[in-house]
Length: 118
Image (cartoon, rainbow, N blue to C red):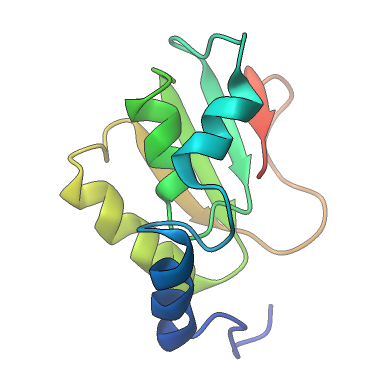
């Protein structure tokens, strides 16, 4: 993995000003809700690929009752923002973060009920 992040702290802060707290792309919680319309996450374990600053993961737990979300990303700066946001929301017992290298993932078969990416 490269040591030079694509998402600096300044870029993360700017994107959140544009797209909302915890979001690095358009849509926010409303788009997450639209994507999940008609589907129940109640009690399910989820893998969120490209979790970014954690806004999606908080929405998956808080608004859609996911049991546990594992958010993965390739950069520490966004994961640091996500961890801070998750702790402020008091959801660290239901959301975990991990830095991964691009490519095949090392999670075992059937580790998650649902794989999500926005």
